[in-house]
Amino acid sequence: MSGRVPGPARLPRREMLLALLGTLVWLAWSAGLRALELPDEGRYVGVAWEAIRGGRWLEPLLNGQPFFHKPPLFYWITEIAMSLFGVNQLAGRAAPVLGGWLAAVSLYLLLYRWAGATIARVALAVLLALPMFFLGAQYANLDMLVAGCITATLALTVDALLRRRVGLPWRATLLAAYASAGVGILAKGLIGIVLPGLIVVVWLLALRRWRDILALLWLPGIAAMLAVAAPWYALMQQRHPEFLHFFFVVQHLQRFASTGFNNVQPFWFFPAVLLVFHLPALPWLALGWGGARRRGARARQLAGADIGDEYGDQGGIGVLTAGGPGASFAARTEAPPEDSADPHRLIPLLLSWLTVVVAFFSLPQSKLVGYILPAVPPIAALTAIGWQRLLPTSRMVRRAAVATLLLSALAGVAIVITLAVSPHRNTRELARDLAAWRADGEPIFSLGRYDYDLPFYARLREPMVVAEDWSDPEILTHDNWRKELAETRDFAPGGRAPLLIDEKTLPAALCAHPVNWVIAASRDAPATPWLKDLPSVSTRRGVSLWRITPVMVGCPR
Image (cartoon, rainbow, N blue to C red; front, side, top):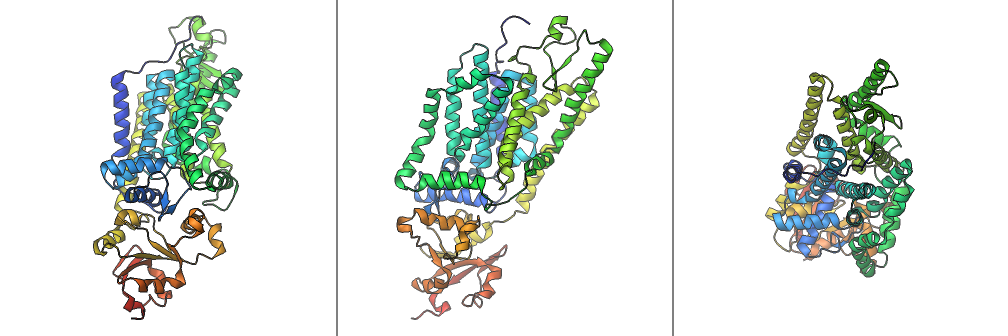
């Protein structure tokens, strides 16, 4: 082919508005139906609630002490949502909803510009219907938020490179990509730039585009990224000299390389997770890709190797060329321009995207399901390309593909409704009992546990006192609430945390106030001598609440 390489397609304003609003509504409508789940949802929303109640937005706090396991973006979004829309579960999940919306819209816009309207629309529909994506966008932790930032950064970077390739202005788009990476660093640290950077580099190396790699090393873009991300990190380091070591060495490098964190799994864990969670998409992939290759091979056999056909191969993957049955011989046999709107030009990118994400998160032994969410958008795009290959097939096949899409969406909705009716771990009912009966200023003591969601649901204005054997050296070897609270002592003045007391001193502490509230696991009460004979005022989901006066525990008058 000769002539100018086609540029990106223009997205109609009405369709773009419909995609933006429709995606947001679909992800948000059920986000407030179910209770916050412990531990993750309660922890992160609870930290945001502490900022609301105390007015300290810059420094994340857990039970009144600095908490630097994660950067602040999730908390800031949640705090803004709760300030605008009230302290409720929907506002508590605003960050993952926004992250899912950002991922979906970024993929849609990238595909629309460079792969065509049909691919973009189908990919968006597939992505929103996949239960893993739908549920991830309604789970209040950082995984979907960072997945959205990574997808946006990647989409902007690719758009900039493709614009450069066809001679269009591209520097502003690259500047936006770097700024998006800065937002990603505020979402979950260095992964906000490392992961999209790795994906792009692998993609460009596979295509042997050395000059494009050098073009990305642009000082104004790096400056924009630092302008977005660096101020908060610099401020926290100024306040707490040990912050950068804890955040980057302990929470980044050690978590990546160590085995003492949650959910140790084998290397094949994430491929298995993606396989199971994307079963509805597998028929599309199998029929679309495998069927197209077989049809192409059959056409070559019938027509002869000298005339070509509708299907070609590049890098072992059957691809559709720009020509069709009515195109000229040259148009059908010559490879299309490298950066045309042909969706198959993006296949190397999508495969690099999927491979890098899976390999990156498979290396550490600690593996949580949400980590793999950045791999879902390329699967949706590959599925959409498979769908396009199904268009010439029978109506029955197309109907079956649509049916799997609808069933997939219904499965996600069914899971949300099930969890709303029968929620997992939470203290919502107990917290509401506490809020109804407790007077302002009456202290709360938590014995051998810390329920992250209780301050949020009880609307507590003060931190709780947590009683535990804090001298136990085993506390810092297990990744749980004990370790998280114990680590806050590193940032407390003088290393002292007065709200963390030894469990043996709890009875004496109850003597200092006319009325006290104690929370403990119901099964632990019989083994606690001073507590076992006291009647609880409420028991919910295996957790009990006591109203205790000094005379009840034998305090001297």
